[in-house]
Figure 1 (tube, rainbow, N blue to C red):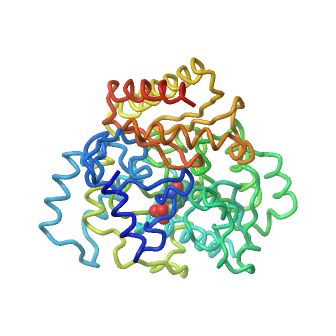
Figure 2: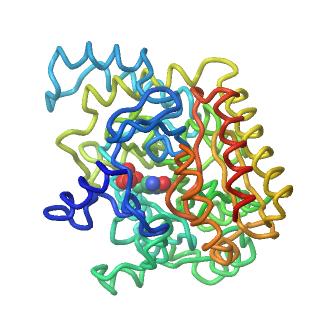
Length: 425
Ligand code: PMP
């Protein structure tokens, strides 16, 4: 950790908090963030040369593992043709075609440079399309840091205890209503009174920013129903779940089609990317066809498209997500067994490629339960695992991610480490 400590001290001189995104600062767990130097497959190597089995995968994008040779070779080749043109390219056509093929609810798609831009733009489009201003989101869901969405948000905002940020104009926050995740009755009650004023509902179809909380049976179906009845636009924020849990995203896993989908992370294969897409009728309200403005200097960047296309090609091979699901199952059941042996109360949620461990004896289905878990136990577990060379998200409110590069041996090594750490808690 010597080199990380030196770098963190240096970083804090000219970078607020020493990091370019808050959750990296280890505020949720204490201690010095690990400065990484390189990554390959399931591993990351820090500035002191220590190896970690990585369960963050750059917060989701690296579903095929770090520095996958197919991705790196294609990116290297693409770089030789120039890094950015600010003009249309065939790569963007290929990307749009691929996304629309994989996700049937998406007729048209627009690329952005981050997930935040994707959700911001989707909200503006939903408002422009419906002529309504109110939006509905769910407590503990995170949709990036756009003003309208940084109200009772998850992820770093939750970890830092600032789910509703100063700096968001009250007039704007007033238009955002936050309901309880997985509470279908709450949704019906809101729509009974305010359905006609509601432009859209935005939801993480599997919540991954208050740890990992899948939808309860009927929850997504209820959202579909109230949106159909009221004319509100249903937006699935699949920035995290898109192409991770299934090639057709979470909407394929649960069989509920939204009107719009926001994407990011995996679709850029590790390059800065986001995207939003959906029904043709809605997307045709977007400039330059329609009046709702949205743009981006680096949107559809050729290097990002190349990395994303290669990653999508890898994950759309038959069996990719079944294998990922089996790995997730092996990891989660191994850790739960270890917790049971150690007498540590723990439950878990999992979907293919994504998991959440909770230091509690309750099944966690919403924000209130997620925030009631034993955070002190999580912190000790996190640091014990870090010492043992296992890199988990440095917050009890983030999901864990696996990749196709994680071998059974990596997973078994992780479970052995967990067994030792849990015994010492
Ligand atoms: N939506 C979801 C569901 C996310 O998980 C994230 C980021 N973790 C975002 C939006 C924002 O994406 P970005 O950080 O690329 O702006």
